Length: 368
Image 1 (tube, rainbow, N blue to C red):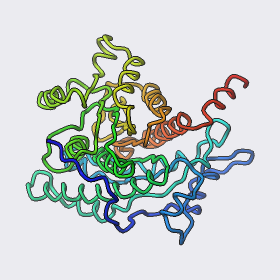
Image 2: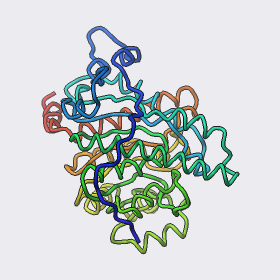
Image 3: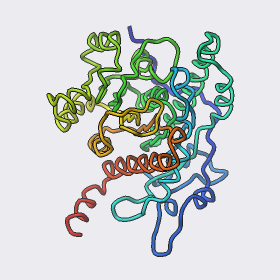
């Protein structure tokens, strides 16, 4: 039975953001004569400025920050490495061309959530030890609180968060923070090989959505492209019993058996979740050969992932974009760079889709 919380302002928590300053942005931007890069136009929070006030006053529509952790992945017996995605992504995003198709001035870069202490502790813990596993769950809950608080601030200021994980455990804080800011439960669509709707056994990367659902923050949930080989009978049974609020399609029935069409399923999923504000979730382990905590050889293409983000991003009820589970450090040097570049594509796809200038982009293309 879901526990419906009072959607009031969460207790104030000390800010745990390591700010990304303009000077740091300049260092990772490859300046070239005759060109303008995102890093030369993206906004940062000035020193000695109160974050809450700046979020409201800042003209940027989108707010970007990273969560460099893999605590939830470790607590779910997964491969660590997701903490490295933010560094790779911000370097790639800073070097995107600033042009009529997408403008860096629409993006405010906050920096990264400070999880250094939690990351140092989790590396000393052993998943196979019951006490250590419980401590991992507690560390995930600590990160949950910080993510929730920051997302609440951003959404309440009328901005659209774009978050680079980290593990998929952070979906819980994304959903809860958005719900608190909106004053009501929100929905989510998740491009993922896994449901992340596992039992409530302590917080980890495999049950962010089930915890958000149980606590009344998640209204409707659609899993897009579930892999049949990696979904338990228990999870499928639970979803079946919640069919009015939780639904899915599978990668196998779309891409292998061909009994469903990708474009049609995008529309079906949108109808199911778009009656209220919803989050767009994308787990990079759903894309083949992308270094991630649960890397796959079979899955939707990069182009389909981008189409997914664009399709849902243009809906007026889209409330955030969360890209998670990328683990560049698990790949070779070339793959590390490509993961960041892929995340950059997804970020700008969301910005273009959700921008009032989207029609102008279409006109630019026609009149080129």
